[in-house]
Amino acid sequence: MSLATEPLAADSSLARAAGPLASNGTARDFYELLKPRVMQLVIFTALVGMLTAHQSINPIIGFASILAIAIGAGASGCLNMWYDATIDGLMDRTSKRPIPSGAVARGEAFAFGMTLSVGSVLFLGLITNWYAAGFLAFTIFFYVVVYTMWLKHWTAQNIVIGGAAGAFPPMIGYMAVTGSFNIETFLQFLMIFIWTPPHFWALALVKTKDYARAGVPMLPVVAGGVETRRQILIYSVLLAPVGMSPALFGYASPFYLVFSGGFGLVMVWLAYDLSRKHEGDAARKAAYRLFGTSIIYLFALFAALLVEEVVPMIPWANLWGRFLP
Image 1 (cartoon, rainbow, N blue to C red):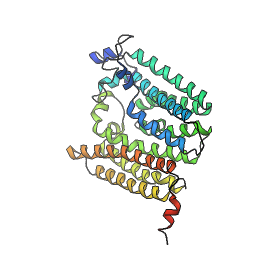
Image 2 (image 1 turned 90 degrees about the vertical axis):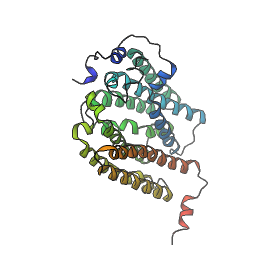
Image 3 (image 1 turned 180 degrees about the horizontal axis):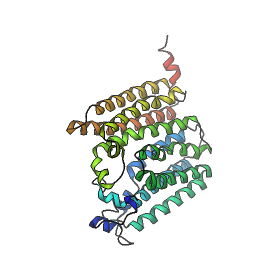
Image 4 (image 1 turned 60 degrees about the horizontal axis):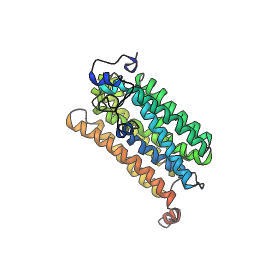
């Protein structure tokens, strides 16, 4: 039985997490339940997916669609915190979250998350199409049920499979405009999907004791640091060409190809550097360096795709052709 289904420990913070059905949580506490940092990535990648549809959309409808997708992502984060309140209270990294800290009651968080989930799906369906709404509903289900309730507590590959949930937003954004999806948005999905393991495992290496204490079978806990570093390097090597794939398939310019390729090499080098440092402060710094750079990497690549969509007046192909023999 996973820790998430066991009775709460006697620890006061955990006791508060399962305590009263009402709380005195502030607006800030409820906002934190939505995992705003994750939501920023969702908003940005969904926007890129929407713009790569190459179809006109009413700006108000477009803004409302992004808002609905963001709220759906926030609802997923809220339900994740509701279910994992027990183990959150056992980990230093998450012990100050609204539920284990006692700011928001567990029942309140569940009601809040479910209301936002249903509301975001219905709202997206009414303003765009029910294909996009259905995909958003599936994404919420995948993150909350498949990842949070099952994979996270069952397998060391939890973040690999579960990472799909965080990779769906570009496809939802595209689908909100077109009612379908294409290879271009699948490549955007793949970029986030392959990026997730090295990004998250780099942090997990530093927080191994946290996960061990909470009984979560993250890869460093189950397989050890050496194997985790090897897997990070493998995924980073895979990520480099995947990050270049929009240009390789003709959906981005040669300038994007060079930019993404160079940044991909940086990721590979940092992963290799991490693989050589196993102990002490040097290993910790190498893990944090890869973790921080990975965030910049993903935002930079999607920003480059965004620039190529919103600045069509730059003749990328013609300009590149002048430098060719």
